[in-house]
Every structure is written in structure tokens, then in C-alpha cells.
Image 1 (cartoon, helix red, strand yellow):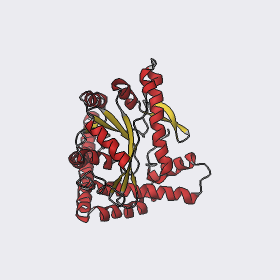
Image 2 (image 1 turned 120 degrees about the horizontal axis):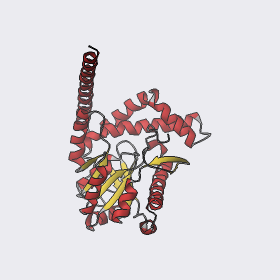
Image 3 (image 1 turned 90 degrees about the vertical axis):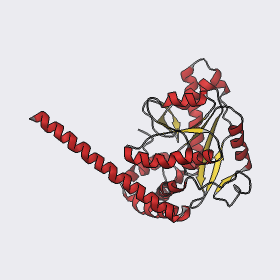
Length: 316
């Protein structure tokens, strides 16, 4: 009898969970459909309006406030709330801009369409680096963080025919995952879900001469502790392992939000890991590479703390 009751409860729980997943997926689909109809600017403004009014009031904002206070000791409450409001403004816009990933970029990759005042600004030096990566026939890794609108990078790469596989963490809701991946896949091309096969699939991509996009700024319990914003943070070494194995170019890039639904693309020169590639101690080399990559992301966060995802518990 007890076993029967436990099985019944489990079936009931799974049924309710599926209903929850379905309702969440329908809500996401309807919101994105509305955003599509509104156009990018009004959709982005709507996302910011809702997120900045609700976000600071919910529990997850306590994580952000605590982390901001730790990283910036002595910060005033007013400045901390300004950063937090910016985080929610950016996050709300990021979500509603999802509906327009395929249309944010101009048709042609030229100085006039990507110059100052355009929706997506790309300096000549950054454009030159992008074209070199696209056309040199070599594999490469491009890393970014959860800052600005990180999806704009992948959409731009696919739009301008840079073959790139993007590693991502799938949502917990498998139905919502299909909705979001339908948009993401159409705008960004090949996607590699996080999991035990992710490193293998990423290696195959580089081995075939492809390009790999990676988000590398979140907590990873099986990683190593490296300095980030003045504190030690557990960080994945996947990028370092792949870079050492293939000795391929590695660049950092991010899409800074300028105002509303407008962006400026930043891309570093190729990072110099020549010394790390020749080190006999693999663990020491991976640590050195991971520290350099994390330092690049720290520079972005310090430049625009209001656009980084402080809601994620980075230090644990």
C-alpha cells in the first residue's frame, strides 16, 4: 500500500510538473510573439519597464545586492541600487530582444551600416578581426560573459557567415527549451548543450576547423579558483583545455548596450597564450589561461557593472 501511494504521488508530481512546464512555455511564446509584433525598440522598452519595476523587489535581487556590496566595499546604497536597476533594465531588454535576434544586424557588413549611430556599431579594427577569423580557415574560440546582450554576438556571427557552434546551458523546462532553441537555432546556427558530451562536441568542432563560442563567467563547482573582482571564484577550465589542445586563436568579445536596443561590439586581439601552450605542467598552464580570460571579463564588468548578471551567485 505504501509503495502504491509513493508511486501515485510521484506520477502526480510529474503530471503537475509537466503542466507547469507547459504553462511557462506558453507564457514565453506569447510574450515573444507580442515582442515580435511590437518591433525591437518598443519590445526592448517594454522589457526594461517591467523588469526594473518588478526585479528589484524579488528575492534573487538579494544575491545581487550582497555581491555588489562585497565587490565594492563602502558603496552607497544609492549607487548599489543604480547598478541593480541597470542589471534588471538590461535583463528585461535582453529577454524581449530575443524575438528580434535575426533582424538586429544590418544586411551588409560594411562601415556605413555598422558605423556610429547604427543599431549595432562595429569599429573598423573589430570588423577586421572578425573577417580575419571568418576567412583564415583556422579554428578559433570566442568567449564572452553574461554582460550586455550576449546573444547579439552569436546572431551576428551567423548573419555574416562565420560558422560557429555556441555552447549553452539548457533551461530546466524542456518545453520552454524547444521554444527558445527554435529562435536561437534559427538566428545562431549550431548549438552545443552543456553536459558530459559538451567538451567532446566542442573538440570536434575545432578539429574540423570550426569556431566555438563560449560563456565563461559563471560558477562551476568542478572548476578551479581564480581571481575575479578581487575574490576567488570557481571557474571552468574547458576553454583552457581546448585552447591548449588545438593551439588555436582565442578572442574575447561582448556586445555593450549603448541605449535602448543599440549596441557596440567589442573584440580583443588574439590573446597571447604562447607560453602556456609550451608549459609542461598542464594544470599550471590551464590555470594561467583561465586567469587571463577571467581578467578580460573583469575588465568588462568594471567598465559596465550595470550590464553584468549580478543575479547569478558567482562566489560560493
